[in-house]
Image 1 (cartoon, one colour):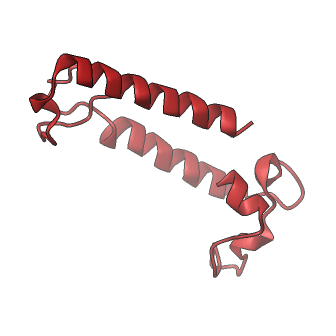
Image 2 (cartoon, helix red, strand yellow; image 1 turned 45 degrees about the vertical axis):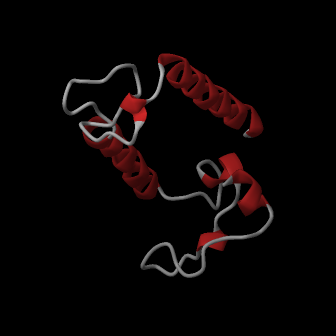
Amino acid sequence: GQIVTRNGQHFPGDIDYEGHSFASFPNGLAAINGPDSISSAGLLQILAFVAVLEIRVMTDVTGESEFRGDFRNGFDFGWNKQTEEWKLQKRAVELNQGRAAMMGIL
């Protein structure tokens, strides 16, 4: 989101019923703190949505997770057919990609 919006590309249309377009809000931290920032109600809506995702969606429903972040919840996408070495390598790749994404946002 950071690179795309800084390049001037935004969703078309309005973000609310008052007629504010997506492009009318600034990029980066100015979007949450500044004269043209998103309203407090909008920020609360975003935080509430993230909270619902964290509490209700991104959880181990079945209690059968093998590791932190295992949200398969009874669905097997071929993970159980792989070797332990392959699983460890895939988890390491995912961890490194997350670290690279965090560094990329800086």
